[in-house]
Image (cartoon, rainbow, N blue to C red; front, side, top):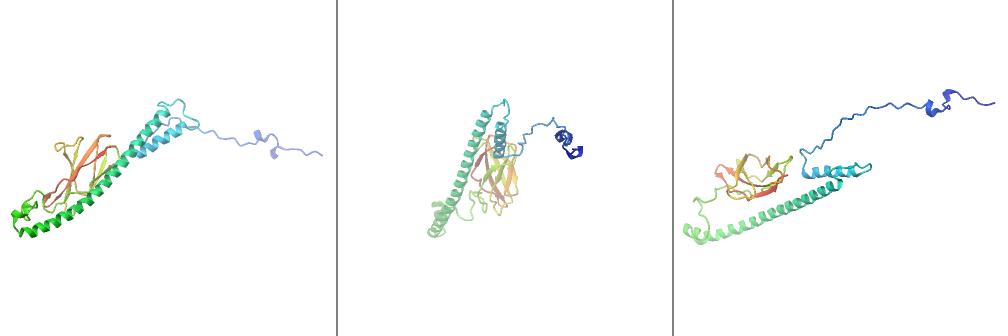
Length: 237
């Protein structure tokens, strides 16, 4: 005897009759592109640039991009090469400063030891002391007493466009640190005061991107200001 099929068994063209109906979703069609570049460092910006080019070239590729992906890739590659060169030069400069400080320390030891010989030979005669190139203790000199020259000035890129971070090892006797800047080319006449810092770091803001910024600092103690540090420079990003 044949088996009769019923509707509830799902055998009567179930693909149409018993299938679940998919709800329609209304898409939001007014979204806009956000570049989100504010506050990013150059390397972080480059990563976003490269990601966009890769995504636009993947399947399905963006039709008729303007500028072309080839032009964008060439620009990104040029930026990467530039950043790599800056990183290399900054590391070289850091290494040179470390070597400078080590050589300065060695020369200071030699200078001090030689001064002891001059002191012994002079038998306290100030004319003999000055004859051999040393200052006489207790007499005014060109350097303010107890105020050391800052020898660890470092510059790094800030957290936003046009900003530069300045850091140094602060003299324990320093009440504050005077910060001066100069445009390029740097001369004695181009230095201008930027700020007085009370900590061992500060930020210089609102400088033109791509410009060369020179910075120097000096400690200020109860005895007055010390010598200016060796100037340092950075390319503002």
